[in-house]
Image 1 (cartoon, protein in one colour):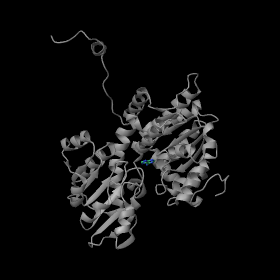
Image 2 (image 1 turned 135 degrees about the vertical axis):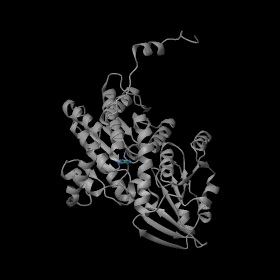
Image 3 (image 1 turned 60 degrees about the horizontal axis):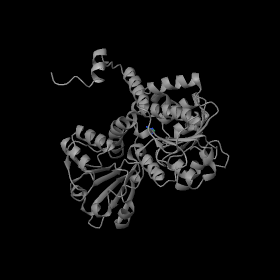
Image 4 (image 1 turned 120 degrees about the vertical axis):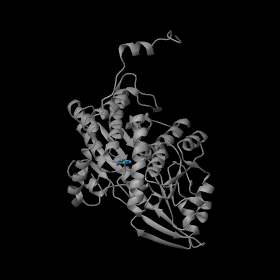
Length: 427
Ligand code: ADE
């Protein structure tokens, strides 16, 4: 790929398969379709250059199509080296003329070259899933940052990074924490991660979850989702936490709560969903059962201390199955690592189903619309991490309910009056 390449994908010959996959996902993304229609009419992004660093999946392709329908020139690169669907990437360039730089399995140098591929287009607006674009704009590619007026962040890990940048006083562009919208995290993080993580584990291993002891590390929205889905499939679930409120919640949701040092001895399957480093650490491997399976569904591949595992292993058998590596320890026990410790739901499966990404990407699209209008307004938008207004979340939830054929009640005039009064107490 040269400096001015319009795209870098594995094989354009995969494009027709990719288009089928994108169209299949579109059937389950009715809210995004309505927004796309509105964008096509009003062209809110006319003349705008957008750079997006997202998982290159069929669902993301539908978001990119919607942004393009709104008048944007969109360039897309992968937010994880193992999550790209190569057929989708090929179709995005071949059929939609959306510049796409993503190849599944790309090495670190190519990953960063692809990041640069979208940055050097001189975007006005950026979208991130994990903050790699914003990070590059603040460090290695600073000469492009003046042109960027606003950025959107899709995931918890990215919002944490950006909040740290803001706290240090070094953030240079306004950012919208799309992740923090209820229409994103309550659904995508919980039901999306819950289902797609188990999907990735099952596709990789073909394990029966019923009767297995599953250790869920972290009880945020993602952990809650994974724990409830694993329990629903008949697993005995143990939760580990560092936050007392979340630990209590897990206990009252009916799960055993243990420190990791004890849980490590009991689990058949370990799923880390914390966003933090080395939650499965060197000390845990030697006490695990023979045949224990470990995986990560947090954004970065830092949750499992793979380096230490590799160091202590007396033998490695890579790819014993697709996405499964075996490490044999001095105590002769085998530990199986899924997807090289990268996001198991996107590496071994297809990520969250389209129906839930419909809400995430409707939120993302409307955040871009709202944010761009704000930065273009006379008041502008301060250089900080912003939350989306609740009215946008309510609008998305209303559209989703309608698409699902679920009517709800509305306050009567009497109830509205009661809620806004203070003087009606004990009769
Ligand atoms: N994150 C999780 N699942 C995803 C998907 N299917 N597409 C894009 N981003 C995702």
